[in-house]
Amino acid sequence: MNKKALITGITGMVGSHLADYLIANTNWDIYGVCRWRSPLDNIEHLLDRANKKDRLFFQYADLNDEISLIKTIQSSKPDYIFHLAAQSYPLTSFTAPLDTLNTNILGTCRLLEAVRMEMNLDKTYSPVIHVCASSEVFGKIPKDKKPKMGIHEDCPFHPASPYAISKVGTDLLGRYYAEAYNMTVITTRMFTHTGPRRGDVFHESTFAKQIAMIEQGLIPPVVKVGNLNSLRTYADVRDAVRAYYMLVTINPIAGEYYNIGGSYTCTVGDTLNSLISMSALASEIKIETESERLRPIDADLQIPDCKKFKAHTGWEPQIQFQQTLRDLLEYWRNKLKNGNCVLTR
Image 1 (cartoon, one colour):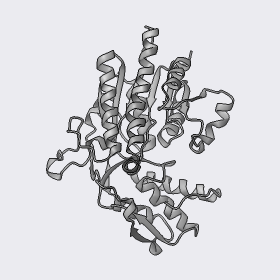
Image 2 (cartoon, one colour; image 1 turned 45 degrees about the vertical axis):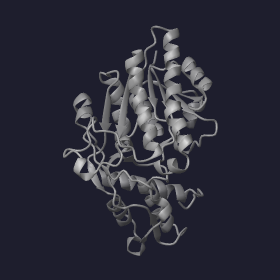
Image 3 (spheres, one colour; image 1 turned 90 degrees about the horizontal axis):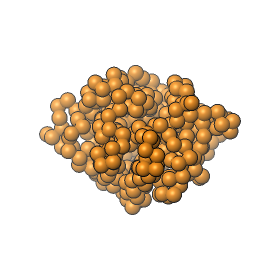
Image 4 (cartoon, rainbow, N blue to C red; image 1 turned 135 degrees about the vertical axis):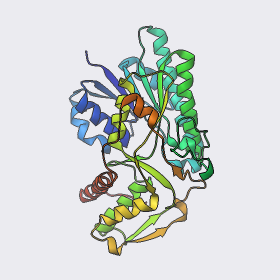
């Protein structure tokens, strides 16, 4: 009998790439949690498989509805749970803090409670659960406090947005359920990860989308930006999901927590310049700062120390930064070529 994996947020960038990875590299059956209104663009290529019930099954549930989560766990009874669903945009969290906190903290609690209830009913049931927190938990670290080798797991939390605060709660909940209820919950703090299907609210993706729109003549040759001075360390989303697979399959340790991230560090401005350089219209493109793209506080020194995770699993990032950016830009070019109407944001 095939093992079963449950992915919350399967319609997101990471969830869809994780589904791709598991289909290609395992014989597991995959249960994807999505809301009835979730856009299916990122998993459009998988819909035929889902229609045929070929290793892919959708579970309609919502992190804000406890009953739907209980039913999902009861009906699928997964061996592995990848909890990726969240309100994931830091800037939005400043205008919608309650929704962010409710979805990310209480939603995680509801999911873990649903699993705990099933474990109480069936004493043989013991899934491996990955709770996805975020590097944003470390927040705005002063330069004089930043460790020389990068941010390690035991650096103090200093969240710089309601989103980051919600991910602190998510992180701590995962460890609490591991310690209090003997559940195999492992928490990750993934640093910036991107690639095809990245949402256009994130800096590198909105840059790529705007460049593609300029190339198509849809907007003037001006890229609107926020803070270009923040430092980021980038990983490719396809490396990220491979890390998540290794996390749950290589000696998973209940209650452990890991930083995961790429190896290429640069400013947001450098990322923008790299993307612009990939366009035939590079010499014509101007840059303009837009106040609404600026956060009230910015987590601006995101450089990870990933030695702990690498030592445990042997994982290393494989996809080069420039390839990630090329694939992201090509994703937006193809999306626009297909006649999709997109917001200018």
